[in-house]
Image (cartoon, rainbow, N blue to C red; front, side):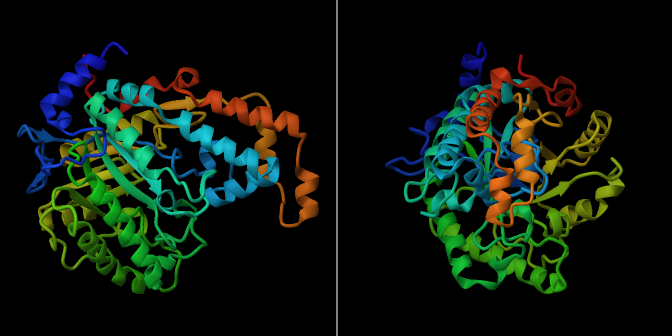
Length: 418
C-alpha cells in the first residue's frame, strides 16, 4: 500500500525499529524504550500520551463458531472435531494451515493502520505454544512463528501489539470462549497453572526486548458467572495473576502486564492488592447496555481508586450509533479501546467475509445432531462439494475479497493517517 513508507517513518519515531528480526532479542539487551505507565495514562517512548484505539484479531488463532456462522459448534475443539467428521482429519488439518496463512496477512495489518488504529490485540490459544494437537499441527506448533510475523507487520505499520492468552490451560472461563470443558479448571489444577506460567515465561523471554509489544494480557475473561462456587473462584484470581506476573518478571522487566476482571472482565472487586507490580494495568470488556458513563461507573471508580490505566479490550456488536456514542464516553473517561472483532463472516466487524456459495452445507452439518456415528454419516454432505466450499472460504477470507464496513469503522472515531 502507498502508506507503507509513511508507516515505516512513524515506526522509527515511535522507537519501534530498533529491534531486529521480529524476535525482539538483541545481544546487548534492551536498546529502546517501552510504553510506560504514568498514573492513569500510557506514555510512548517519545513522551506522548498513548490512547489505545484499534481492533482484535479474533478467530485467527482462537476460532469461535459464530464468526463462521455456527451456533452449537462454538469453540475451537468443537469446530475441529466437526471439520474432521465433515472432511476427514487430513483435509481438516490442511484447511487450518491455509486458514492461518490467509485470514490475517501483512495486507490486513496495513489496512488496520489506515483506519486510524494504533494498537492490535492478538487473542491466542495456549496450545500454539505446546505440542498438543491444534489447528492442524501437533509437535511442530507455530505460535512463535505466527507472533514473529505479526510483530514484523506491526513494526512496519507503526502499530502496538497486545498479546492476549484467550484460551489458558485447563480453561480460565468455563465457556466456549476459552475452548474449555465447561468449567475453569485452571483454578483447581496445579499442573495447568504451572503450564500457564511456563508458557508466559517462554513468551516473555523471547519478546522481552521487543517494543512493538505493548504488553501481555495474562488471560481473557476469567470465571464465567454460571458457577455456584463463583465467589470461591473469584477469590483465587489475584493469586493466579501474581503467579503469572512473577513468572514473566523472571525474564522480562520491560513490559506492561494487563489484568482483566472476573465475569467477562467486568468485576474488579476481587482485587485486594491491585498495585502489586509497578508495570500493571487493568482491562475491561463491555457488550450492550446504555452507552453512558453510568453503565461503566464501577469500572471507572475502580480505575480511579488504583490510579492505573484502564483499557476496554473488547467492545462491539452493536449499532453504529451506539458504538459512536460509547466511543465518546470512553474518550471522555480516558479508557482506550480495541473493538471486537476485526474480521468475521457477514458484518459487525471492520471487514466482513462474504459467505461462499453453498456455505450453508457446512453450517447445516455443524448444527446437525452428531452424537452417534450413524448421525454423523447421515448428516455428511457430498465430499467434492463440501471440500470445494471450504477451499472457497479460504479465498473469501482474504482481505481483497472481504467487504469493508466503512460506517462501522467511522463509528469508532479513530483518526486516520493521511
